[in-house]
Figure 1 (tube, rainbow, N blue to C red):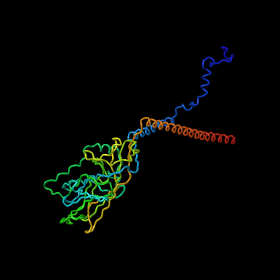
Figure 2 (cartoon, helix red, strand yellow):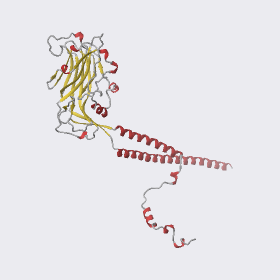
Figure 3 (cartoon, rainbow, N blue to C red):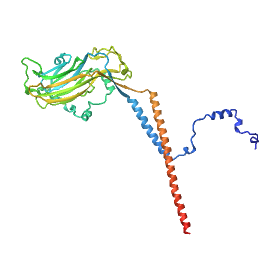
Figure 4 (tube, rainbow, N blue to C red):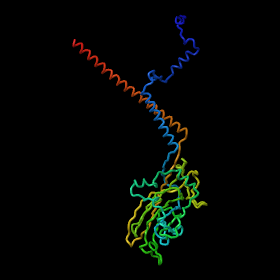
Length: 399
């Protein structure tokens, strides 16, 4: 009507950059949504709800993992030379204090009269709550059910290391009308960092003592172990033998505990497990009497020891020595337990990746379900139309 078509003109000739837009449009690599994909369907709504629920669950899981952090365990050969090993113990033996002998001896030939270094308090066996104590356990499930066997929490150790009240609890008072029938032996002693054993025996048995011989009928090595640990004393932490109780069925009975001690580092410094020092020295004593390692690590790092234990008890004949024997051996390896967190940008990237993967998977699932529904619908229509045609031919033949 206006003569533009006769002259070969259209709307693109009236734009100053029509050719440029055409050239740019040629580089468009993004696929366009088909009109059928914009139609609202019931199945699409179900898939969308499922996508939202799964996305929320997985995002919540990623955030919770980031909040808690990730704990890694690394083993390596212990660096440097260690000399001292602090032993913390708190035993209650069902015998009088004057009838017990406590000693420590190691393969280096040193013998420590632990009875002079430790504290002994007369007490009553019934005053120690047996309900809070448990047996060591003979099966793996019994050990796992015990609160002493749990996953190591770095924060528990770090908070315990900052606890200034690193002292043993007071012994319960003995009522006036009662006579002490047990002895509480507790405290910390310093030994050599080599294989050794700590043992509690009866007076006049195991060591030669002039005119010191306890009547065999007074032997009773039933005991509570309130604390047994190696390294700095952290009262809020639980070790495998803590709060355990063992009862002697007879007078001549021997309790043996075999411990494998592993030097352990707990830290939140991710670089700590790669730090090594060929000239590392043994921990030195501070003003508080505790052991302090050379400060080549951050303040969020503590040095301690953990151990695995195997127990064996058996009755003895009268020509053998009954008592409580704790044999320990220091392993030549070092365990570093590190708790670390990923950065916030890394968390966001992981969340984006999770949501993107869910969207792609849901898209494929929706397309496959729609394709299956379409195929099923075509087959259903084919069967219906085939049945009508067959009936029509029969009617014609009847005519």
